[in-house]
Image (cartoon, rainbow, N blue to C red; front, side, top):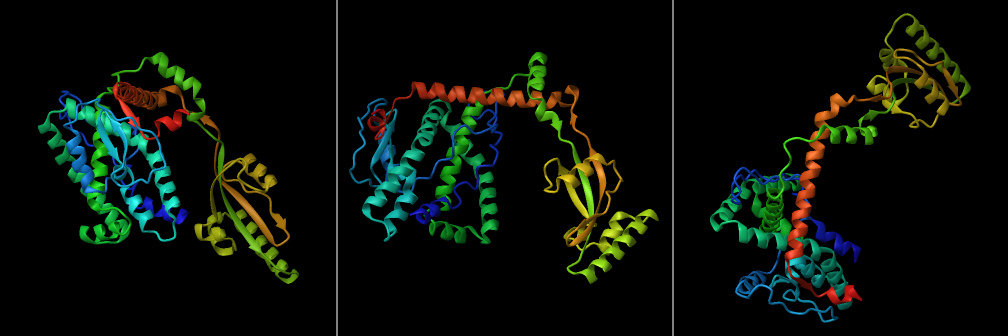
Length: 387
């Protein structure tokens, strides 16, 4: 069953990191634009069945707030089962899990009970985010003139094509027809991906228009944040080290290894670069990187004695020679950075940007909660959840 559910994830989250477009003025608010400063609603799975779109169009003629009472039952779920109503508009099974439904229904290994169980679990997981999106989209339809909504749709097409190009490159297909065929094999399609992308972008854009960052943040708030989050602006002490390791497996090889290490020490005394000696003598993989081990923090090495010595050394100094059961080893500190806290003046702008973003996100969430409070929503799970 887990393998079946795993197939549902194909391409679903491919476009989540795409920023919203600047669509200034399209929602009738001069000076504002649709920008993504942190989504507050997850993406929605696409509808799959065309008849549901017709049903939703018909539902627009139903007076708002004329609702049907729902209770969760054990009746079989079909694509046209109404699972919720938002201000009188129905949400169907296939609006949420159309591709999932087709996949589980086509899997001969699943029993009817298992199919219904998977669908109910997926509905519960996806329903609330979808309802939130539906609430926002209904508000967008009320507030945004029809001609502006059409402009928004047009402006979203170009970034969506960019998404498709990335997906084609990722899946090594050269055209949208082949991509669509591949997606159909996974229970979705280019058109369904487009619908889901447009829906998410419009929701986030509308909420962003309800949130305006303040021009400035009070200095007291900036300093307060700095003092309460000093760890964010404090770098850990660290060293960058190099190594030369000469290995042996028996006494004869040990003698040879000791001689090589003596040559290394002689070379260091004569001024030969540690990196050059690492390339020439070291048996460690790091020899390909001229002995470089990269940056090390306290606690990163299993050998605590060696770690302690590295952090005691200054830049350019080398350790003593370590004799191990199967190797001779020597280390050098390339650089040593002490713990440092950035001064407030250096991070003030960074803090201001962060606090502005937090303020905008809080406003977006507040707007969403306001719309949710005004909406009338019923679902087939309401009564069961209240018990």
